[in-house]
Amino acid sequence: MTRVFGDPVDVWVSDGRPVRFVWRGRLYTVRRVLEHWVTTRDWWREQQPDGEATGEREFWRVEATPDREIGVYELRYDAASDTWLLSRVWD
Image (tube, rainbow, N blue to C red):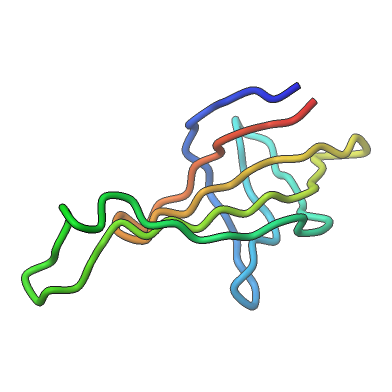
């Protein structure tokens, strides 16, 4: 079962990959990356003054743990706003 969130998270990145994140006051350590993909949203509507498209989002589905229990979490990085969100959690 998956639950959808949209909570802001603080993420530490190493070599371009998330390695830790804080969600709801708990520190999670990423054990492995399961999937990674990039999407663009409404690129035809969002143009910067120099003509560059904005709206790129990176998604990372990771296995992570705050202690002994391992879960699957989907992190989303929004390049335009330089922010991270926790999108989904799998039970």
